Length: 98
Image 1 (cartoon, helix red, strand yellow):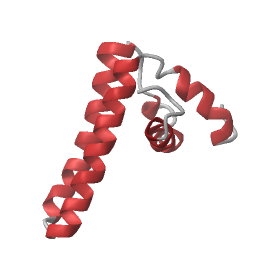
Image 2 (cartoon, one colour):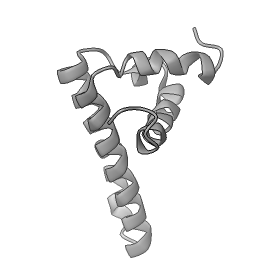
Image 3 (tube, one colour):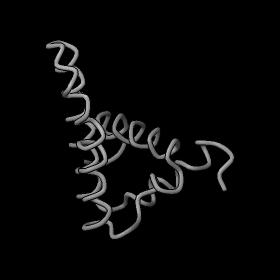
Image 4 (cartoon, helix red, strand yellow):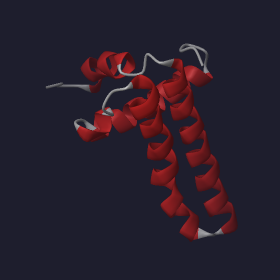
């Protein structure tokens, strides 16, 4: 359906119009980074299993309960993963409203 991430990203953003959904994505991504850094710093490798739970858990709650749509992860997993991080950086930089 999409031949590039550049084509996909506007669709991805349209699926994240709800501010609470975006906030939940941001919180989940932040927790992923903190948990990943903590696992490396402490060498508690078992913490790494939490990464998909934190990242996808917060995002999917946002989609199912606030955005009321189906996460793009199910149809475009790689573009969706990239979109999560691009949106994270854009929220962090103030380009997208938190």
